[in-house]
Image (cartoon, rainbow, N blue to C red; front, side):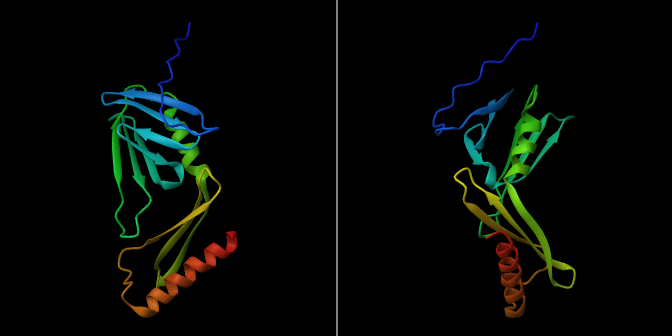
Length: 157
């Protein structure tokens, strides 16, 4: 006989948003919905998740958000006792949000990774992550980065 976990009550779900998976940990439940991931005291829309990794030995889910315009990335680490389907659902939702991701060289081999992700409302949000050593103060480099971003955006929009 399989015991089913009770789905936790989630305040603020929007019309059409469904709970896909839950997992418990020492800090409380983690919940994946069709629109976002609820982690302890924060929530992250799938289009804002840059990476998510699972360390089974440490029983730790690590989520990194898309870099802000300042280049800062918020990181979340959550311990989970029995992740069940949650890890697979997180992976599927992050992958499903990415429409396009291209790395284009702008200075030798170094360049920019341009990624377009779809939000639950259907909008496309764009991010550009620069490789280490790219000098955005150099006008020629800035121009090449802007051209690379425009090139990738034109493939989709």
